[in-house]
Image 1 (tube, helix red, strand yellow):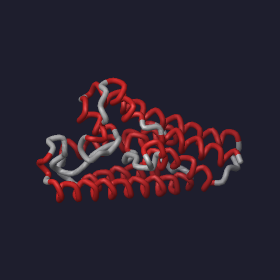
Image 2: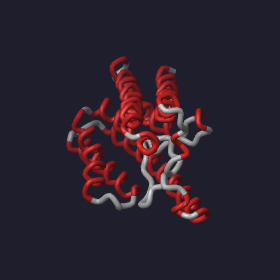
Image 3: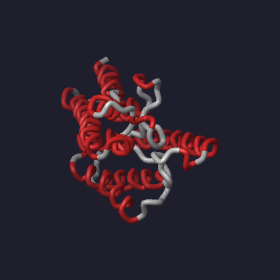
Length: 215
């Protein structure tokens, strides 16, 4: 029962659309009208620069971190917690962000919340591996498909987790998280392409020219 409660709480934590709220409170804008309509940190950057993106990133990261600590608390309270239960609890905030009921289940791509969760459950090496890979690709290969960049980030994260010799439950949490991220990438790539085909990529200067991003 306690595991089910933590899963539910983590899902709700993840579902809070902080980036959207930051845009509305600080600038009075709806960030989902920008770019690929993704309610995430990158569109907050498009809508208001670092003034919106920085607090959005911090809050999205924080909700993942808090949820990750709650998942870890399951093990502290009961070391015999089933691996699958812990893995679901760790992936729940990512699913909550991606399929938030507060935005009619049209959530973001869950990159920032994933960073927060894995920092909480695996420490700074995981954070540096994931964030570092994404940032390095943006600097060296900005035109690469976003699905590729995100996938490589997750592969590096999984590799670091393996090198850290983390328990098998981390592999399951990683797989569940990766699945959610890939689904969201596919959804937003499809939406962006369909809209660009229908209206033209140049109809709105806020639309990205080389793929979609978001957190």
